[in-house]
Amino acid sequence: MRSAHGIFVFLRSMMDNPTRIGAVLPSSSALARMMAKQIRLSPGEAIVEIGAGTGVVTAALLEAGVPRDALYVVELDPRLADYLRKRFPGVEILQGDAATLTDLLPAHRIGRIASVVSSLPIRPMPKSVQKSIVEAAFAVLKPKGSFIQYTYPPFSPLRDPSLNIEGTRLGRIWFNVPPAAVWRFQKKA
Ligand SMILES: C[S@@+](CC[C@H](N)C(=O)[O-])C[C@H]1O[C@@H](n2cnc3c(N)ncnc32)[C@H](O)[C@@H]1O
Figure 1 (cartoon, protein in one colour):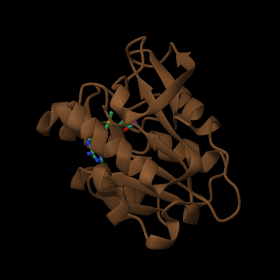
Figure 2 (cartoon, rainbow, N blue to C red):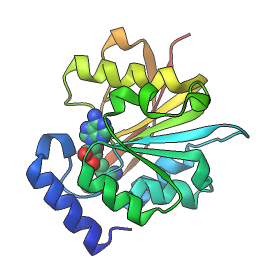
Figure 3 (cartoon, rainbow, N blue to C red):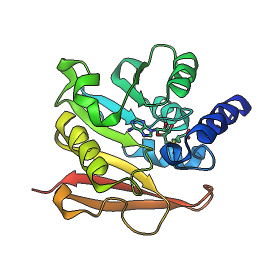
């Protein structure tokens, strides 16, 4: 749910850095639920969320049953990271760049992440930045792990062939502002 305080913190961060935030409002809970619905977690595995913003997707992941100690949340903006720490006690909030995931996560989790769930504004990012984030995500994912991403346009947000990934569009949420589609990416065989 979008709380008034959450929207206020989000708007302040957006005014400081609009391209890094890349959205006019926090995600809707319907979009967050569709992202969370994609998660399959086996014992010993964890989930990583990147670009959490105000935590709308974080809340949906917890509601979908992801245990607090199996969720790692990465947010670049220190103000939003502080907000997330207060909102989600017991969840590991890592303030830093998603491109450095292998340094941010504890060593025992590398290669045991079932899914990386991304709210990053990844489509308009330069190809080199996209590449470093996608490579970092697949470096921590288990074999056949998935990278979940939402996007606004009707085409894939990650189209550079050198990424060596294939995407499936899982659905579209018309009630989000603007309407958004959820995609799942996996490494090509
Ligand atoms: C579209 S907003 C997330 C919206 C979020 N789903 C919500 O409802 O609040 C994108 C977020 O990604 C964060 N971000 C941008 N670049 C990042 C990076 N390289 N690593 C981690 N977080 C990043 C921004 O600070 C922003 O909070």
